[in-house]
Image (cartoon, rainbow, N blue to C red; front, top):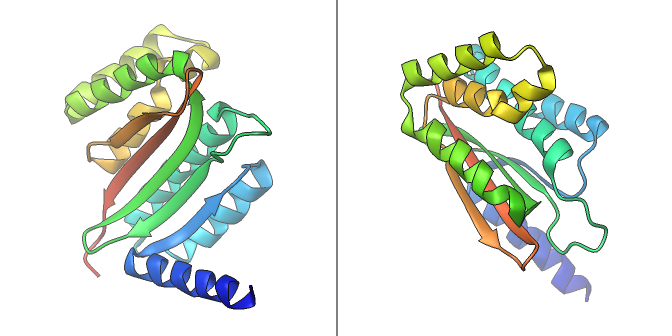
Length: 181
């Protein structure tokens, strides 16, 4: 049994190295955990301007995991967070279980973000700010999603995998161009 566990640890390490994963966590997210992940990320992101963008996107993604992840003690699909880097991009990826009744609305918001250019995103953002004074209403309108799109300057990659009649697993990947080092 001990050989299997150490081989698993080694295989996981090799996978993370080859996939350029810098940080990974799967489980229940709390404000204390978010603080730790953000501190750890600072040492894994090069360049001040790219660090600021990635850091702000991380904050929004991690807050979304704590607020919107489906909470069920018997779930076989815990929420997850990944910070990675390949040759061109840093990426922040999240995954969490959500209720199927929210899939269409979230899919529509993300598709709209991907369909707009930078000016369209700014107009949508400004419209929400001007027309809605309530912080809750701004959250419902997707202002965080728009802000992440403006910071990343890239299209989102997302998917919904139906788990059962009640829930789906939602994944989101946001890329930020890495500075030339």
